[in-house]
Image (cartoon, rainbow, N blue to C red; front, side):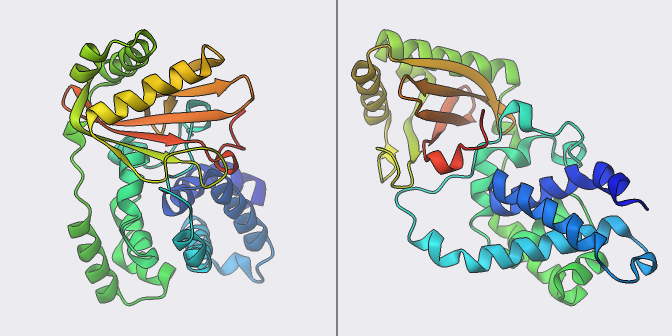
Length: 288
């Protein structure tokens, strides 16, 4: 098949796999591009019986290599690590995972759960759970036996505790996020205490590049105090733009200085349980 047609038909799938593996929009895009270059240069390509599976094999192994080579860098990361946010205009409508877990597997909370798995567990789990491939196909992609892949998947599955029923509807989540912002601006602590859980946790990923809390901020009073102080500090020198971030309502805050903060949220019932703030400019280069 012509490489241009293959690219059009499989780019979405490959990006979906790479992004979930890496938590990086830019690295995922680079790997997808490299994959098609590699595939186009393969000798005897006509003997490949399943182009899509072979492309996934290349992407998977590129991701595994990158995760292994960057493991030390991750250990030295300053403060909490969060995945690069994927905004509404970037979410590919024909994402092959949409029909299986819809957008749940794109949420920041789900991507952080995947980070608990080692590189091989993550690869096998995603290929089986999200896309999904047979154990025979996965074994060929990752160079393991079928029995070993089955064991790896079961082990990974036991480690992932995710309840999609805790996610509110998009309309409910939008209302909660907008109420959260408005209450902070107004300094309405009473309403804020209704919107967020008492044990709420706020993760701030500045990567040592910008000012950000280097440990999670835990508890409703501390989270409220931090945000109200920030509003006072910047004194209206900012713009709030609501957006879909990793499949759920979130927001982008742009300061007059050009600094950006991208917020995503995790909910439990009718309250916000986790707040994720990405401020590391290196992770926001793809956001226009």
